[in-house]
Image (cartoon, rainbow, N blue to C red):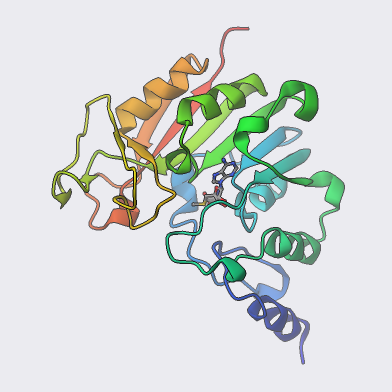
Amino acid sequence: MTDGEALLREVEKFPFWYHKIELPHGVVTPGWAPLDPSAYGIPPSLAGRRVLDVGAWDGYWTFESLKRGAAQVVAIDDFSDYLGSLDISDRKAWKTFDFCRDALGYPISSCPRIDMSVYNLSPEKHGIFDTVFFFGTLYHLRYPLLALDKLSSVCSDEIYVESAILDDYSPYRGGLCHGLENNVVMEFYPENQYGNNNSNWWVPTLACMMEMVRAAGFDEVTGWKLSESPSQLSMCRGFVKGKKTKN
Ligand SMILES: C[S@@+](CC[C@H](N)C(=O)[O-])C[C@H]1O[C@@H](n2cnc3c(N)ncnc32)[C@H](O)[C@@H]1O
């Protein structure tokens, strides 16, 4: 058996992968996310930066940051998202993350991971980060503005946010092609109205998400959509980059 075949066998022992992560010997973990990594707009070099990866799951963005030269990435997750369908026993918490870290040869000190909610971040306990990645998590939160405030309290420079957005899809208004583009609003989902997932609470428009990031203390914000005319719900996503230009 080749090294690649042996590694693939180990990968296949895990019942579920969310991320597609490139491992050595041409092995790629069989998840579906991210759909289009280039759309996130993160810098080609993160040389020397301390990065926080919120909702890290299998660790795609943690390892991507290290590949781009980050000095250290702290990954956090509370494992509360089951995608509305994933069997709880199929979610192996940090085991897939640890497996990829070891396969990629990174020491624990370069990418420590903490089992915790974003709400419990503090500069005293966790230090200050140059860059925060807040991907795929905002709409899973009951208190998204509190989360952004907590993230701002531990961030000295830049935050990158990715989320479901309301611009082209609203379950209350007829689904796809029935969104609220250009309005500064969020919709609330008390049950499983959005994507059949009980852990989806709020979805903002892109304009709203930009204002939320600004309200958290990032005075320079830019936003963009994954697709201008999405053909399915998974494409109804938006990105915001927030930067602190004043100290
Ligand atoms: C849809 S996944 C996104 C994974 C990854 N960030 C990405 O974008 O590819 C959402 C992740 O956020 C985590 N999560 C949800 N609520 C959280 C919270 N309050 N604090 C930390 N992580 C949370 C979930 O357990 C899950 O791993």
